[in-house]
Length: 472
Image 1: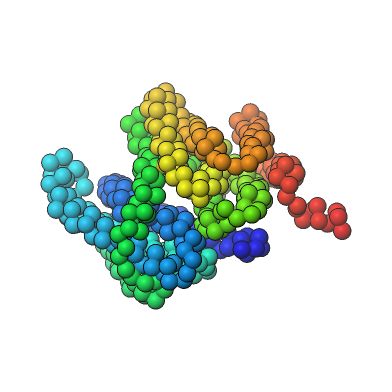
Image 2: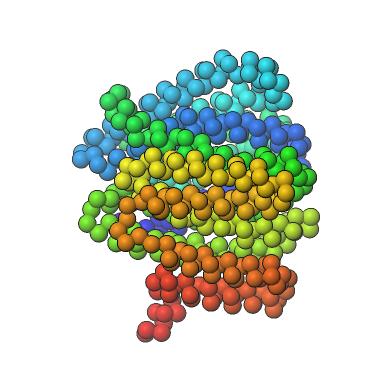
């Protein structure tokens, strides 16, 4: 894949990542007028359970397909690989669904879980089963490096789901149950599309030896995936026990804004991962990684400073006055979001080298660090402790991944310089000088952003339009 196509695909993936988040963000005020806090509690609880079930249903075999697809020598072998894993994932999820339906009512009654088994858990589990059929079709388009079809497929389903849930909740006034029905109908329709993709482009078969090989590769990633869920969820769970619920709301808004950076990270990840796996072991692989890493991290750091510097203005535009103080959390939380950008590169290289144990352990270690800092500091510093915990956890994960990564002449000097410069500028503006929004300060921030961008272009060796104009 050429550098130009890689940039183009990253932009396409970015659209696929950004559009659903934008739709969800602007529909949130509408939903809050129709769903009570108790409704949101039920929705949050069932979503949490389903997230863990989804990890056990996938068993990280999607990563196995991504990693080994390019090692298959013939088109038939590639089609059989995807078809084999598709059937196995479907089989596993049917078992999970059946077991959950058998033991679920007993668990909810015995432990006095406040969420009714019927209909909310039932519908959530059914939706999770249908969701599992999307895993391999989406992976297929990624290994084929067809970003347009990947994004078209995922985005069209998201839009349909939003339209249906909006219709059920707002127009038909079905309340919370309308959310589950809207998702159920959209997933049911797309199951037929997923089946069409698989039946047309793969060869359905069952190869036990290949499944064993896949599980040997993928299972070490599962504890890491679970730990990653704990890493991303523990702060809000612990916050609810130590601070006013309004503070949790402010933290959530700040977290969503800071991790808007993840849209760039995830779009880059979807474009980079197949290309890294494809090129691994070939001549020039490490030179390719260095070049892509510089471009990718340059964009991540620049966008991070944009969010940090203009967090006040963004809060004024998108949130009410009671949320405004959350802008001070953004520069801290963004450190963790930046680390996920570096994390993508390191994790992908280690996965390509088949060192999935290190990848899995990094998430496990990050989850433990997060849990320790949250439990220790949230009772003292509240939401600021949660923000610091996020930054420290992701930073610790990255250091471990960097140490375990086998990369010639590896160094973090460039990344540390970029991070240090970010901290100096962002923390000076937001904390030390506490610059308030106005037209003069807006242009001051733009100037600081320009200087930062220029300095980063030098350390990451990126040629900007200004450099090109000077040369000409």
